[in-house]
Image 1 (tube, rainbow, N blue to C red):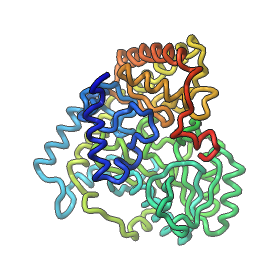
Image 2: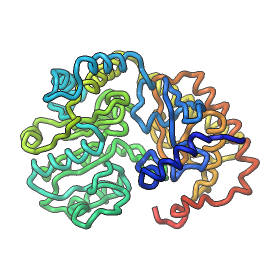
Image 3: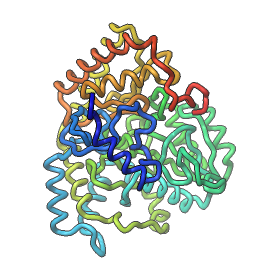
Image 4: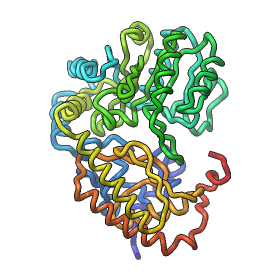
Length: 425
């Protein structure tokens, strides 16, 4: 169609001149289908509008920050009220203490809280606190797990030197033997074990944590004096109103939080138990905007909604409705569709689709029908979604499966994802 995505294309051309690569980081659409928009204008509830004014039901939820809907009136009102009173000041407001109290009251392993801006801030603080507490260097973490974009953990190590990534040993998530071997290799230098709430790596099926694996991680930390860190940045408050591993009967020493903590306003946190309190007090971490009051006001209202509403039960029911409906429609169209992970954070992958050519075609067809999904990253549900939204997505999926069926034999390899079939992941 003439003029389709015209403003988005113009913005991309302008960005190329003034932004390295035109875009960077996890919100770059460089590894998405070519018709995916890069720039957006606004969001409301469960929907976003791209730079050309096209409206989409958004299953990415800003890659997780949107829990209660874009532009949630109650949360944003709290933010705006505090913005009028004061935001970035010479010191924090009392909201910082209130928010720490609220989180300590909600998260069962937590005795204290420290605030920052991004998930990477929180995970990096967890590593530093662990090293300060143990006086050791080595971190044990799962292969392929994402814990942020700092030099010690970035998945794209351009510009990173060997010492930035030193003192790390990797294990296979959910593999007790692999975890034990990594801990044994660390010996008496183990500072911490990092773990995700569940296996949510990109490009591959997600997996729930094996309770035996989670318990063994706790036992190994107890036996060695190391700290157990659960990285809740992505999954926090989408699986439970507590730390995710409490469902397994396992309490970490530290947990990192972010994304939906303030429903899209910039705030993240590190929570910890009394064991790590002295170490946390001894480290030097700070940021000019870490103590902003307005995001903390938004977070307090977000936590109130988490405590007082049935948001979790509703998004779980919606996720089950989506999963069941997609399974039916995929089967009817003759496709093997693997849906993995929690229903509130789904991932869709097709059978026999090493370079995701089916996934790319399906995602593009969904986009054309007004539904924004992701072909290789986990998605998110938010509390602003309704049964009607899910039914809209299922109707779009029925059409997308039908379109895929007519094209599947002629689909060309996805060149930008050739590294997947080449085994370079």
